[in-house]
Amino acid sequence: MDLKYAVKKIVVLGNGSWGTTLAILLYKKGYEVTLWGANASYVDCLKEKRENIKFLKGVPIPSGISLTSDISPVLKDNHLVVSATPTPYLRAVLTKFLNIFSHEIPMVSVTKGIENDTLMTPSEIITDVLGKRPVSLLLGPSHAEEVVRGLPTTVVASSKDDTLARIVQGVFTTDRFRVYTNPDVIGVELGAAMKNVIAIAAGICDGLKFGDNSKAALISRGLAEISRLGIAMGAQKSTFSGLTGLGDLITTCISPYGRNRRVGEQIGKGKKLQEILDAMEQIAEGVWTTKSVMALSRKFSVEMPITKEIYAVLFLNKNPLEAVSHLMMRAPRSEMEDLI
Image 1: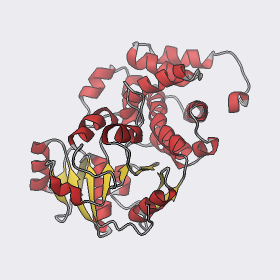
Image 2: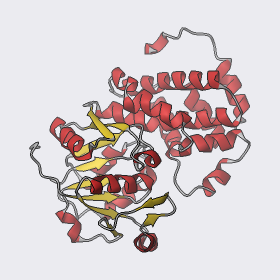
Image 3: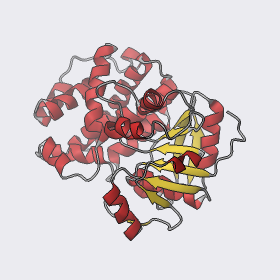
């Protein structure tokens, strides 16, 4: 792809907190931005209030951002598509756009997850549904609530096409939103997805009122098993020490904004999973990613003890304290074993 590829018009698919934040960021940079949402009645609400009251309360949406739920040929005129739809809904949403976007229009995936039925990552789902096309990732430790307030944030653009990654880097970089590039697409996308599983475990620690020692151990050992699976799937080990590995893991395990950490915290306090999910406005990707990661660990014969226990707590009704005991009483081993 030509580095001089001119980007002027951008459509963001998904009007959750992150899609809305990126639409605002891009609009402030001078791009012509359309923010698309699947729910027509909620899009009408956004048009009326110019505020995403469910997902990003208190943040005005500039009048220059076009809000729509239409799937119109007009969208063909866009030069870049940002895919910000949660993984469980991504395939269905993309299917709506089968005959809209040409194969030349680059797509930027900002979604973190792994599809349950296919074990595909979001970028793989994009290609599977819409066919071969230029795809880049934009992932990293980036809570919407902080980015939209202009707090300094760093993320990673990753693509099999280095030129596209650099185009995306240029499109999104601001004085408060720094974008690095990394060619390890597999590692970047897996790290960003799997950290949500460990974030649920971190929340359970908080709900059980464990301390800093517990959280530090969890983050360290969580990164170890994320790295094991990632390397087995072809990722570079060094990626997991970077922004979409360790960086994203730290953020999501400690932040009050993290939905996955919040789910774990409520479980640690004794609530049931379905009760927690029913009360949430937004999806906690880590719940569903846990299922996919368990399937991948079996497929690639990779030991993932933390993920295994979180799966048992979420879906087999295992007591969180019992899960902690099983982790603590595993057979002694070297910290350096298995590439750790």
